Every structure is written in C-alpha cells, then in structure tokens.
Length: 99
Image (cartoon, rainbow, N blue to C red; front, side):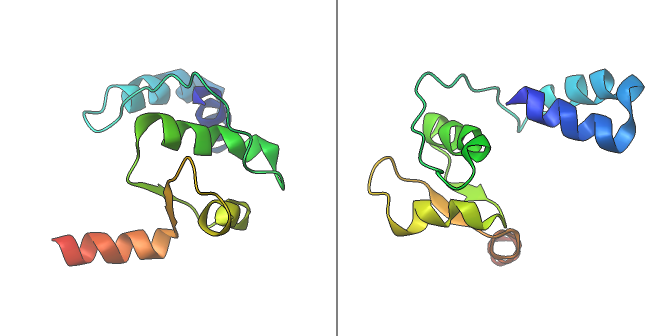
C-alpha cells in the first residue's frame, strides 16, 4: 500500500519530494507499517480498493475513513471480517466530540 501513497504524493509534490515525504510519513509516531498476509477481495466494484480494506482488517483498525462509496459493501453485507467504515466528516465530528 505504500506504493499507493508514493503515487499520490508524486502526483501532488513531484518525484524529487516523494522519497522524503514517504520517509517522513513512515517515521511519524502515529503511523504503523502493516504487512497484510491475507487478501479478502471484498470490494468487487473496485478491486484496487481492496488493499485499504485488507490493511484495516489486518491491523484491527477502529475505523476505515473514506468517502468512497465502494466501501459501502463493508457496511451492508460483510459479517466477517468486520471494520467500521465512516466518512471523513463523521470522523471529524467524532474527533471534535472526543476533545
């Protein structure tokens, strides 16, 4: 999944800054690199999105924060493995209430 971040960072900041930004991202105290050992293939509408769901499952994430409607399948039809999918706005609201 680091490749996805690398791609997105390079689009926004250019290749010269990408390696530096990735290194900084991975050194943040609230970032953990997770190895995914099993692929669940739950996002049929966009299989490229599976890597984020698989990562959330693998690390036991409390939330998968996304506005991408492809993840709605995880809310509606998947009993196992479970992860709570919320929108970015819902997550911001949650953070505001927690502080």
